[in-house]
Amino acid sequence: MQRVSDFSDAELWTIESTLVERYGEKLPVELADAEVRLRPTDRELTTCPVACWSHGGAHFVVIKTGDQRYRCQFYYRLHQQFGTGVEEYDNLADATVSLLQAQADHEREQAQHAPDPG
Image 1: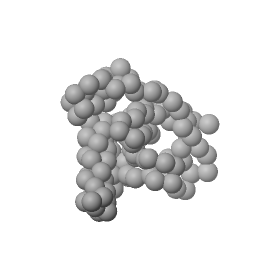
Image 2: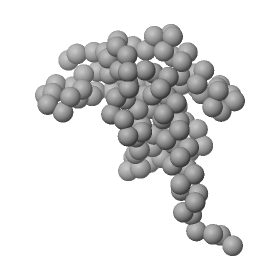
Image 3: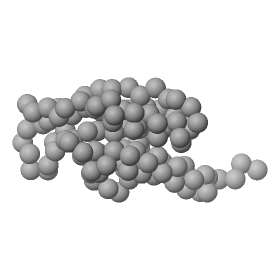
Image 4: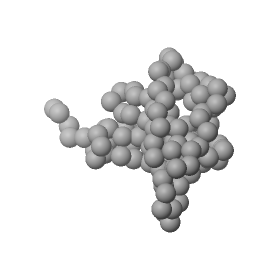
């Protein structure tokens, strides 16, 4: 099985500083691994590093799929998974900002369609 190199200190700093900028506080970023099919035609899975964090009931995942290649999504429950509309990014800052923006847009849309409690 192939393996993608771990997040570098600079990559982790990019994620962490983007989160501080967005939320005004440092959030814990956890690291893990995932087995990913890099292309739909691949028969073998590749072990890829994952950076994940949670905020306000949402869980965020950034998967490093190669040098300067990232996939991302957020979810609330396993059956409520959302992406950014971009399959893969070549810039980690763009991936992280787009992920946070997609989740904020989703929250705003949900709030607009929520029934009026009054």
